Image (cartoon, rainbow, N blue to C red):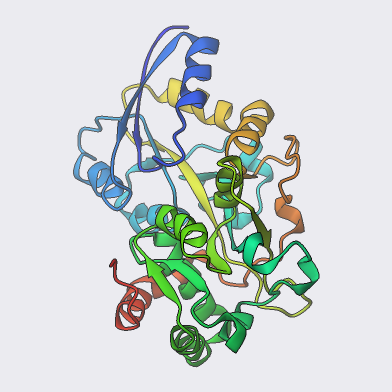
Length: 314
């Protein structure tokens, strides 16, 4: 098999270049990637829906695809692996599929909190306590996962609880940084105790030689749970190479590729048959009880709420 495959990628950090190169070597299909800012990539495929210029959309959010699904730009594909997915990992009609999950955890600075995990926070509310004053970081609204996490809390526990929690976190000196990258760098540079981040950030930071670890929050019976977002892939409706696009989706979900993503970037795998190593399996994570369609409905109002609390990009 030979030819080309065009991908629009809104997932640009960590870079998926090793995955693209491996697919090329195994199939002799040349992968052409346009890296597009994650807030813009869905708009690009909507604008081009009459004449798609790419075959695949690959991005860093379920929510982003959910928000444009009604535009009819995706071609449903029930990939074999995805047929066994839990409902929340895919669109109801398989028009988009998750390929790795990103749970939100507390990224622990071991130089500040030590190595005794029994003394680490176990709930998000713990960060409103006096000992964490000025010691917690979080990314701004530039990161859709920040908005999605607090939208999920609103859905699960109600507006009053979510706003009160935000007020208490902010009153306790929560630091807001432009991105997840800036947040994890500030964790070390500014000697914070912890940061709210996608769990794979811990693996990446650890591989850079930083003394970090992860604390899973609100995992007790009846607890709030952790918000879990996912990176997603979709075949574009009317694309020029639909068969190659479906082959790439199957490759991305295959055990070998999934295991590679765990080893390279510490990502939580969606294929239960893949080797996840030290990464916590998806089945072992208590998720926040917040359906994606309700998170999507609360997205814009949550963005306004966060803006009012100082979560705009510094």
